[in-house]
Length: 254
Image (spheres, rainbow, N blue to C red):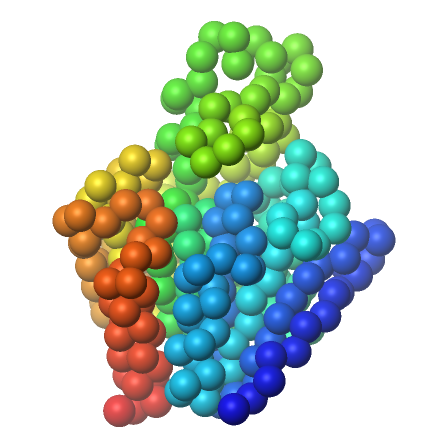
């Protein structure tokens, strides 16, 4: 079995981006994590194990301010995290890729698909959350949080998983610039969208919204009626395994 390699990439300003890569056949499967998540999560490691079993090359990474990468979370934004992902992918997987994006990672995957076109052979979204800053976050801000953003450039939002989340005016302004659901997205490769219907963070109808936006014809939305946002239960991971293996088989002509 191939041994996963790890490393760090200096993006040019002293901030180092952490990555882990598994050698194998192409296209390289790339896992793109969520907002304040990291490459050591359950889904990332499950996908690594799937790719190891299939002999498929695999790459996972941490954006700046996430996981073990350098930089401060508060300094980042969607566009910069997408650029971080692109830098690492270009350096470690310069050929064709299949992008698997979880939550915010689904947004970043769509941005990269728009940027790279046919280099992206396929997409898998796991509770993909494109445009979440403008569609979900901004409408829910309280008057006090809006005042803090105007006054200090930062506000702290409650977090069901731990400490309050720092949200910056920079993040919200950049999120509006990075929107992907406001116009057709010219990506024509196969797409699989996994979405829990008990997701308290991303409304389940987001997945059909994404499907409508894509130019691709081979788009399948898989709704999990009792699934939550994380989709990390054993049955969810088994579904992800089956979906990815099926997509790779399709791309290989099987």
